[in-house]
Image (cartoon, rainbow, N blue to C red):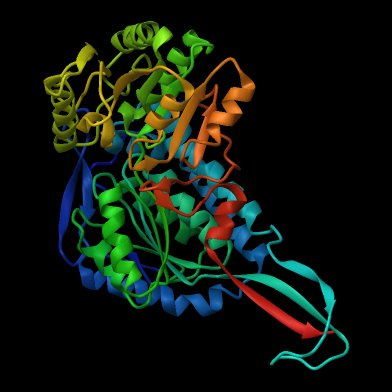
Length: 494
């Protein structure tokens, strides 16, 4: 399929109350991580812009929350139709601003966004209310007299105004993880995409307005800094904050939101363990682990970045993973043969390489990759494996968010589980074993919201979220619908 060129001179705007507006704080350039060339110019929103967007969402909420599920489903499907029509425009745009490979841009960035919109168009029609069996009225309490029965129902109501603050790695898909279920259940939204790559999200919000969403239902602010996001979190018009990003920023948002007891849904950092027992299929483990920790240059929170293997197979696991890492093509993300493209910014490249140097300085052995940039132009990092690590090392404990794996051995099941649980994170871990009973037993003892048992594949209807400092709450499938609703009980006499 052919794709159209990116229009570098295109005008991009904020969206407030159904109107495109310029950023009050000017604009800034968005840079291609592979070429370091300008992709486009994004509007810079002020805190006042964010406050106005939240107020517009608040004003739109009463009428939007009373629309029928059929009406909401029809609008979501129309947005999906429009994105499909503009597919050839969106693929090169999101590819250029994120640095993702063309395959990822086509499948996860744009194709995945279309699929997510369709899923929540269907979700708008899902029955979420629950009716209870009548119970006898026994009297004796402050709310009842004896005789007759009580009926009850638990109904789901929209939370209200949702601030959607999302990460840079899969910008459109991340945003749609909030927009889809939030709109389907009758909420209004203010979107704040990551400052590094907001252009495709801006165009996506334009399509939502073209699809016919009423003014104020979908609002958008953009900024290279934190001002607009902070204003959204503190706004009295915002009822809920849905955030995807680092644990550090998530902690700040939770603290600010907690002052007003706002609802929060947070998908935060990960430090996934690949826990490998000596009965595992080592070749499959190595191939699957390599395919995941190098995907999008390691900028995914579900990556298995700690290789924890039983001592008997430790050397074999390290060598096979390192051999694959050394052979993975790194380079131009528009080349179909490329597997690993650039990371998002030079600052992030330097941060990742700092972790590699730290791992070596603290006693790790570099068996694949490098502590130096992988290219003179663009923000490239080689797939890297550091062996002989210890639990207390910075590279073992902290999220790197790049194509770097640290490796450690263990002797028995108890030690392996302890090592898997030995970080502050608990998002996605993996268990590799030829013993199914062992795999199920171990999976239930790993403190992570998601476990892959002899696979790195995901089931998109399963609940997704983290334990510990990896997040609060769950989304995914129908769980995403529940996340953006409040429960209300209604009781009446029979």
